[in-house]
Image (tube, rainbow, N blue to C red):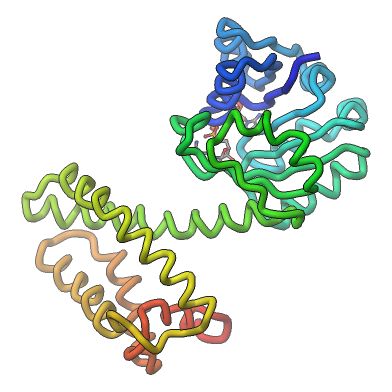
Length: 291
Ligand code: NAP
């Protein structure tokens, strides 16, 4: 028996297998494309010849493939599913809360334990203090494997027993990142148009990390308390600044889709009468019935 089996050796799965090896664990791996397994064998991992052998090798099996359906397709064969009985499966690929609940139901039917996990970070952070992994599912199963999973992330958070919570938070963070990434690229266009270095722009944003983090915390509290009435900057002020990005884009001859979309939402929120409130009051427009 090895300590842990890693199924899926893509960017993330490979980094996790290596973090376990660095932490001194005995690791079995399996990957659809064999070359990735062979590479990691030279670093000390045992390579299973198929998924059945991979599951039989360890008391805990981690899957990190592209989707829940890909993970399930690897396991959903009678002999393989039977081998899960009495073991723990940890699913680390991204998906929806419903997919996590469905996967848990499928695993529990096999008399196995299930933890659902989400990765808040990039492969280079795996195994470091900067990595966060969210885990949801049965508390005693989590406690049994806390030390082992701790080799992957300095910040290992048990979100609770409700198994959809890790993917809920992952998806919410992803939504936040989507806006940030599009905004960063549009900001880069503005810098390029005016001859300012994009790397220097990135550096200025990095220096703002604490302030931007404080804004995220503040918005979360404002929305949860439904308290938009004491704004430091009103939705109208922020919205008009964002709407002006459309004008800037036209003047600079750059793509205006992102400011068009963002400015359009803020314009509608102002027209709906939310202008004197916190910028977080934009959520009122996005809630059902206002779209
Ligand atoms: P990746 O480098 O593209 O690797 C994908 C892995 O899934 C490979 O091992 C691939 O096998 C395997 N796979 C895909 N479809 C399969 C199938 N039908 N049957 C068997 N194996 C299959 O992706 P990744 O970056 O490691 O991401 C893996 C998961 O982590 C994703 O859900 C992703 O959303 C999540 N994640 C990634 C990051 C990141 O920064 N990379 C961050 C957070 C979350 P082959 O090698 O044979 O193709």
